[in-house]
Length: 94
Image 1 (cartoon, rainbow, N blue to C red):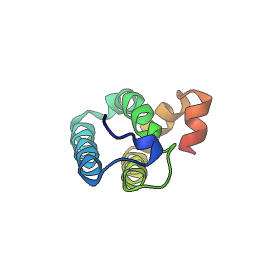
Image 2: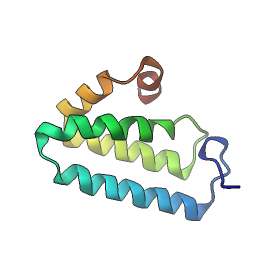
Image 3: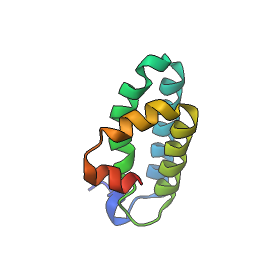
Image 4: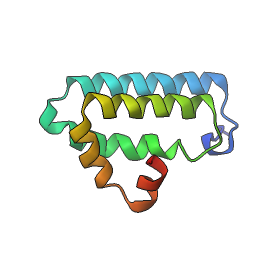
């Protein structure tokens, strides 16, 4: 059975793989026109935010860094996408 991020049993190789996914997300985000960044963040934010609900891990740290990068790179798009999250997700993000 695959390890679960939400119970802290994720292995180092899996954490590295998630880091690579975040790099791919960042490359895609950087290549998208500003007009579409809020839409893209509408997909990325729920995915990344789900990983914040677990105990402090390397994956949690990677996820927080990724979220901060998006917020700094495109504040208006980040705010728009975060505003559309359901209240539970938005609370976790905050």
